[in-house]
Amino acid sequence: MVEFEKGRGMNYDVRDSTLADAGRDRIEWADRDMPVLASIRARFDREKPLAGTRLSACLHVTTETANLMRTLVAGGAQVVLCASNPLSTQDDVAAALVEHYGVRTYAIKGEDTETYYRHIDAAIEHRPQITMDDGADVVGRIHALRTEVLDGIIGGTEETTTGVIRLAAMARAGALKYPIIAVNDAKTKHFFDNRYGTGQSTLDAIVRATNRLLAGRTLVVSGYGWCGRGVALRAAGMGMQVIVCEVDPFKALEAHMDGYRVMPAAEAARFCDIWVTVTGDLKVIDERVFAQLKSGAIICNSGHFNAEIHIDWLEANAVSKRTLKPLVDEYVLGDGRTVILLAEGRLVNLSAAEGHPAEVMDMSFANQALAAEYLCAHAADLASGVHLAPAEIDETIARLKLETLGIAIDALTSEQEQYLDSWETGTI
Image (cartoon, rainbow, N blue to C red; front, side, top):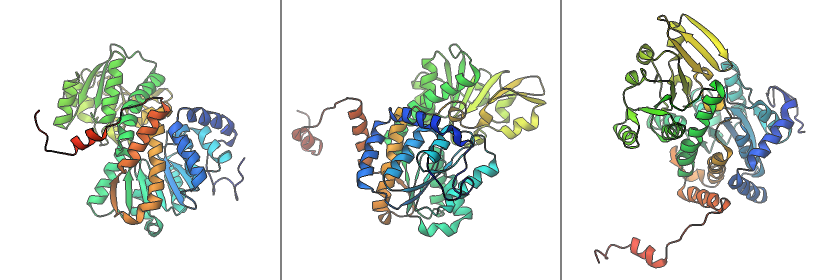
């Protein structure tokens, strides 16, 4: 057990420390499917590339995140962790991080908004040199309310699409005061985490929350980015009929060519049995959709913020509301139709299930660890703004992952490399 100076409140805030042993067992179970991160942790333990670096992380407090925290600590970082969503914390993991791994953790599943931001403030009080965000709440709060800590920050990382969107807006406005690596945009992150991770974990959460048969039902997905592609792919694989709603003509055309029906949201509402939003925008399911929505439709969100569903409209216009089972709320509209909302509109895959499988988070969090190492070495050379993860990090992770899977690939010969670098040879 790790001893802290003053105890709960100042140095950590978790639900129940007696859950720590169970959390440790689950963290070790996840670690079995995270060999890339484990190899980085072993190197970090030898080389200490993060020695003395104060790092504040605002991430979903899950078993996979715990293994990232272990890696950062092995590298010599002084880490404080808080939750990036009020419903995504796994309380046994939070307890284990405090009791077994010495990570100051501020996270309680179901915490209210006041507690959520108090925990973020605790991470900011760490006066980080590196921020590690999932949704940009720490970065946003620092720039809006805690500007006194900016001088000590050398850089940051961002895990998710919604956070990158917010940070890009800050950069365009000239408001972002330090460099941030968009880990989300690394190929080994969004190709796999967003597509395969979100696809599987979202359907897993819907089934856990509702125990509904998916086959034969109609799923509507709003947004056909990497997350939307993953949800549609997995839903179709489970025998569902899939409708895609999009605002981007290229993505809409791609969804059509992939074999899905494409239509406006208000039209899709008439066919919907289950609706998933993954856009990063707000009020995607709004009054126009609710007016047409088939009675008994289940709606949920796998985007970062619950703003994707216009929950305030539901609360204001429903004649009654009841909780049918945990994380399943039924709203009755004035005309008698019912709408079923899962997990308060928050990230359903983390609120009603366990989030992405460890095997895909292995690559995502390998990116986080190597990005932190890169910032320690190169932040002084980076301008304020949003930066892509260095290509060499992405390729290193892809090659390590293949190696752990026992997969070998070909290499170009010198003649082939020369041919690709030349222009003189034409039709033979």
